[in-house]
Image (cartoon, rainbow, N blue to C red):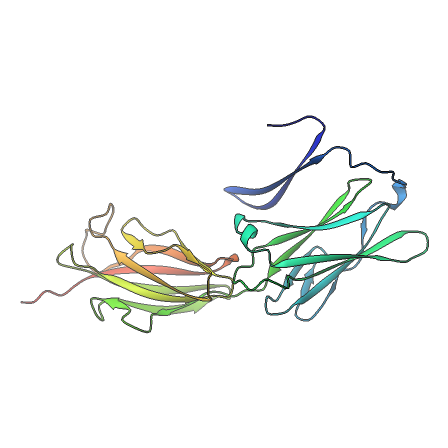
Length: 285
């Protein structure tokens, strides 16, 4: 319900060809108080200053290390009281508020100057680092500037689980592939069983700072979970469903029967593309 005398702000925080992520904020139209408005001195951003491993691109995007605690500072001027806040670009942000901001007035003759310091939240100990937008806003003019913040996370590392990875034993395997540099390939080899009631599964250990998720599985390859970030190392058990639609029925081996991705949950561009090969289990003579 849209109410009168309220201001609705819609921000597109992330986008791809198929989906838009937006953040909507609602506030009273009148904040009260008096403003000394000078149009010639609206919100203006200075040069961002990074700390430690932080890298700055285009003066509007910062990539920071989740292993560090101090990230960067944003100097800016405003014709009135200013605000510095954080918006996360995914629903996961509500449970992964890993950043904090601190705004400090800077004494300077002839203008209202501020520094917004961005750092890691003191109390945050999680393993999820969603992309965030730092919003700088002039309270009088309602001008707004945005600084994107991304965590420097890597491509997930995938290996067969250390204990009993395959069922039946030694039937299924995972082989790591190449890197280029942010997309790695791998091959999951699964054996079709003579009896569809016999389980054919493979347990993979996926290690990723930022969490991991599996996307794009074929209908005939099931997983016990689709994502995890409680720890860096998450086990996923993948199981063939030989009765499912589109399960390979032609001659075997069915190489490249399907592909799926294992992505870093905090940066989907850091991913492993896995090719699934299906072979037929040998039957006793």
